Amino acid sequence: MNAIRQPVADVKRQRRSALFLSAIASSLALGAALWGCSTSSSDISGFPQVASVQSLEYYPQLVKGYQNSYPPRRVLVLASVDAREFPDPTASVHTPDQGNPAIGVVLDPDGSITQRLYSAPFLSMVQKAIEQSTEEAGMVALDSSESSYSGVRKKGEDYVLENRVVRCWVKKQRGHGDGRHEPIWRTTAEFAIDTTLYKPPFRVAYWQGHTSAQFSDPPLNHMLGVADDDAAIYDEPGQVMSVAVTRAVAGIFDRDDLRTLIAQDRMVRPR
Image (tube, rainbow, N blue to C red; front, side, top):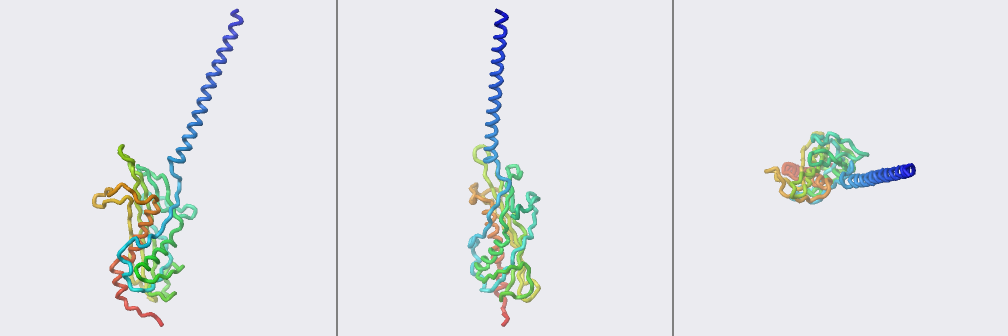
């Protein structure tokens, strides 16, 4: 009997061992599958894409007070030039992506870059924005494909306006939560432009100016350095940058020195 029972017991033990090992393998496989699904979900919802292409635009009539305050002079607006400087530490890497210029970053609460922001080539948009702002000021805007003043009158213009974009950078950062409220996002954009006005056929600059604009969303109380409001107005960093673009471009003409200079200029047009 013992000679018969011993093999049967061995077989039972082997079967129990095989079932136990099979159960462990199944659990590991299920855990791996669940972990894989969780990782994929986290990749989709928890981490942003490496790059995001933003839209930049000019918001007509956003800046008030300078509309129709200039005499109806003809201004030839030259093509905008990208002469940007990148002093912000987050802009140390600003190479274009597939021809799209780098315009900013998205940061985590600790300041690490989680996403890089680009836009479609924006120089033609800036030129059109200056033309539109020229019209808002009460003058006549003429466009040009040239980017530098040649000293020759091309379209019967009274003035020629050269322009160079020297700043264009936006940062969107998520704050730390306090346990009671969700952490907020804050976006800060800076845009600056250098302009030179010529009076053909003279080669010496008639006027030069620098205009810049910084815009934060939600806005900051600059006296205290804290938020005025926790509610953001815009969803996309490109929209915040568009406000800065609009304010900087309008700032070219929203100034007393240039307005007075042009108003007092006695025009003598060639026959």
